[in-house]
Image 1 (tube, rainbow, N blue to C red):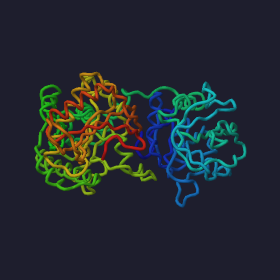
Image 2 (cartoon, rainbow, N blue to C red):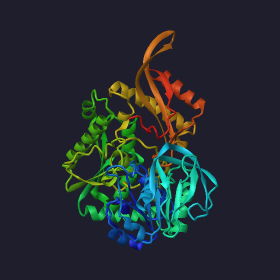
Image 3 (cartoon, helix red, strand yellow):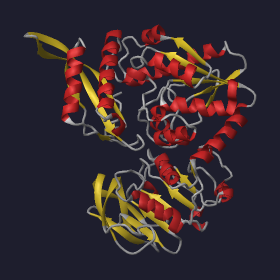
Image 4 (tube, rainbow, N blue to C red):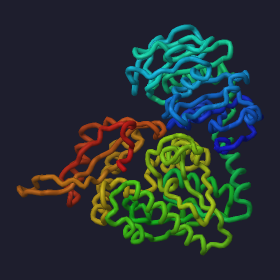
Length: 525
């Protein structure tokens, strides 16, 4: 959403909005997302934002995010303490709570026992933040420091086995702090807690919708692009499809969609995309066969980050070359989403930690010949699906599962060869085919195959085999930021395994991945 970009927007017109200060949390945009779910406008800013600009924004509430630092670390993110004198309700989350405690002259100490993961906390003392919350509840903790001595005017309103102050409150200044993360799905009553902050404490109103997002984004794209043309990196997935339709509404014939066959796509993907966009949606589509170029550059490359960087750079070069054949092109559009951004680099130059580079984020060369247009950059996947429905796209399109930008390159562990690609394409096709027929596909966030460069002994037709393994990865999720492994019925897994081993030469073993995110990522590389 346009208001999420760095720099102050005119939020004063929407006084019910929430300002989020990013202290480097991997979940910062998830906080914004949870607020948007309640149809409340929100913007994210770095801790360098001035008090003057905050007054211009005129938010109804301020949230301090978590972060990877300790408040006592050298160079730990800080903020202007005058924020507490603005008369605006404040909620600190994890590091944000510790920052409040230190700023208000409390004492933050290292915890003798770290708390990571699900924790039971007990709520005490009546207050608006925990209104309607059960006396005991499961929350997600992720901290090594805790409040040792409360600041003057504050009282503890929750406790856990590890700390007597899992949350605090200053009623005079309407300042709250929680040591846990209410924004993640693992916190059972997190949505209710945030809802209490938005409506009972800040007095927000429900005015933000996907229709308003589309209207604002179309206007923003038109202002940014002017009378120039745009080329869009089309993949055929939900993100690029929604981007294409949204940009077409804004630009009409000045949008040119380019589909690059990098040789790392699903089985039959090229034919599907051409049929969809040329015949059905009827957008200007150019297909480029760059298979040899990508596979040559990826030969013998085993490091996941190098794969992503190589794919990203070639991807952009192909677009630069294609743009020279189209007059008036000055912009490159991509279907980048916020999980891509937050996993790839620091938000607004802040202290977030890199998880992995994405081909359309970390892989962009510095001297790119085109300027970027990323209409969905501030949204999560499920929000993109909502935008697609608002744009009247079919459920078949909006319900398609995420597919990584680098394609099967990050689902082949180790070196990429044509043989391994062919094996994985066939295995993945079988997994998806069975998942759809057995009503599993729609119940999972993602389900796919991974090629493992591990050979093991098997027996086929009374003969010894020594072949590769395929891993089945299936997860459930709301937004892709956290995920649990999906409990696929054994008979479905058995059918997938039997078909893969019987129909694909070179595979004699199938395994099932039962890792959640965190600590694992959804993709293997």
